[in-house]
Figure 1 (tube, rainbow over the protein chains, first blue to last red):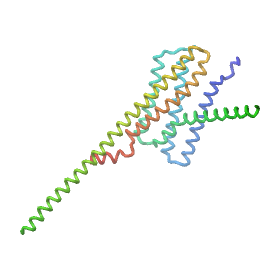
Figure 2: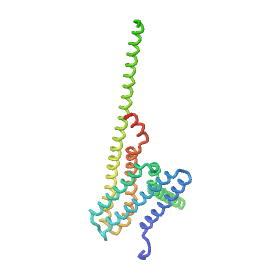
Figure 3: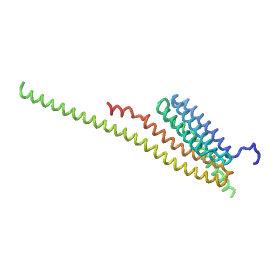
Figure 4: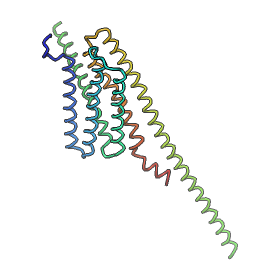
Amino acid sequence: MNDPTMIPPEEALRRNLVKRNWIILAAMLLSSLIFFPVSVSCGILAGGLLAIANFHLLYRILRKALNPDTPGSPVVVVFKYYLRLMATGAILFILIFSKQVNVLAIILGLSVVVINLGLLACSGIKDLLAGLLKKSVVV
Amino acid sequence: MSRKVFASTVLTVFFVLGMSTLVFAADASVSAAALQVFAATVTAAGFGIGIAAFGTGIGQGIAVKGAVEGTARNPEASGKITVTMLIGLAMIESLCIYALVICLILLYAYPMADKIAKLIFG
């Protein structure tokens, strides 16, 4: 456990989430490129990149805010948080106002993180049920 | 010009004028209804993002409160708490972003906007 090269489980979970975000986005993008027009693919790409960037920035802000070893100024944390939200709103406004991309595809792209977390919850429930089943078989 | 022709001409004029008044009234009621739909759309967008921001604010506030209390009690668990809170905040925030997208669609990419504008402005 004291091995410095060993990754803590929470960090492993976060890395796994980030990796799966990219995999889900790639899968959605590929399927949209095959079955739908380019505007749908552009919407999924824009929404997905926005969601993943938001997730990454949120982690960076939280890590700085909650790490007791390197406490950041609360003003800077709040400023960064609102800057991120404003940037997200501005990008979404430009995407929707320009009407160059499909808006439903943007919503689908923004759902990348939600789909990922949903899948994570499903796998957790599956593991839990498998554990309970094993316990009942042993008993 | 006989009396009958004169009477029929007057009646025709009255009929045409009366019908045009009805048509104008119907046109005005259609544009008023279209204006009402437009006003309702804008109101829905405003209230929608307001309610979403209210709920998101409460949810994120409760999550951050719990995380800060947990970190203060057990500073060594800050890593675990951060990742757990990250997942929670991402879920909560996505709801508000969805609401924002829907409101932006209602305001700037409403599918019926052109038809409503045509009905209002002719």
